[in-house]
Image (cartoon, rainbow, N blue to C red; front, side, top):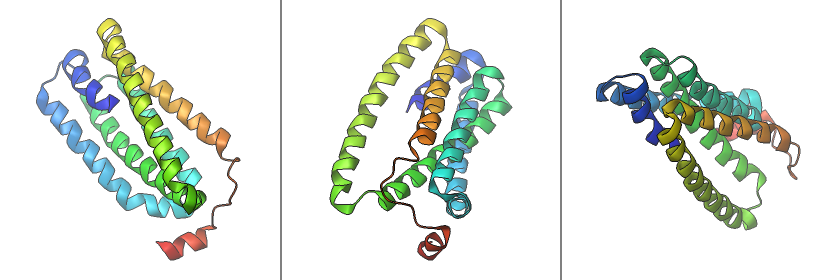
Length: 177
């Protein structure tokens, strides 16, 4: 959602390009998401769900970081493809991880809690980035998203030891997929 607000402003103000670049960026984002659907199951088998989550969140964060560092159309398009892959892949890995580790009788409450928290954080960060872009420009919004992604990655690393249930081995995941 933050990228959806930020990307057209970045294309117009920083890259000085037209709507065709923004549209092409959306196509690349979609292609990245489709590729995630094709690659995430095999990546999960090799790395496990937490490893896959770390790779996808890391890829998204690095892709966002590239935009303010090297502002160019080619970098933006590559970044959008990696953002699509990272976002879709992390959602799939997170959902699967939740289904594997949260007991069924608690799933509804946990899902509702995280859904509410996600909406609050989206609204908060949208306000922060909107204010920030107005004052400092579009590049500053990408720095904020990078900080959020880095914090998320660090949180995943820190919290991977707190699960009550162990994840099934890769062989059990192969049977499901």
